[in-house]
Image (cartoon, rainbow, N blue to C red; front, side, top):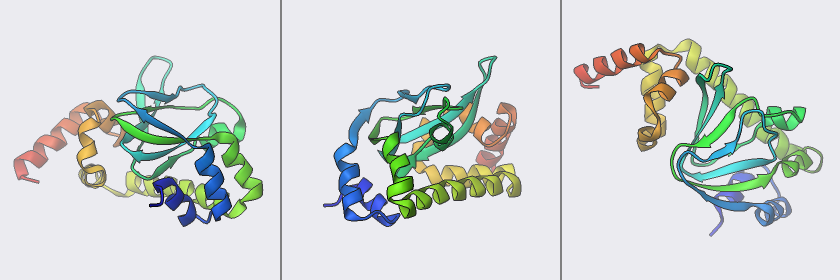
Length: 190
């Protein structure tokens, strides 16, 4: 049986030698809830392939406020491209929100793919870009009710690991707006 990471890499254009190299360097991690993978300000030294579970990226402001950036779940490759490309600290914190099975890959491997496997590197970068574009459309084109429905449907049962403040922040709603929306949906049976 082929590993999920091998399938993911092959799907994105990796040849067998590249897949084998990645698998030989991949460090399997079984992590608990609320495990920090990258601290904000820390240089990203690894990329993470999420086999199972839920992860959360968030910004922490100077006054300690947490602003949700993204959520990641099964079959996501978490690459801090900004930190990787600028060689500066990560602009956000990345943590697990549920128990997770992850394969960690050295960040240098991702950078090597830029020269050795440009098609794979471009496919991964394009995937990140597509996600950013889709998130912008999601935030700008849909009503709060529609954003809530789309997001909770996409994460399914993993939504139970997301706190109300995290969800409100991600959907760009205040806590009272999210509470009102949830009460309205509950009353209407949706």
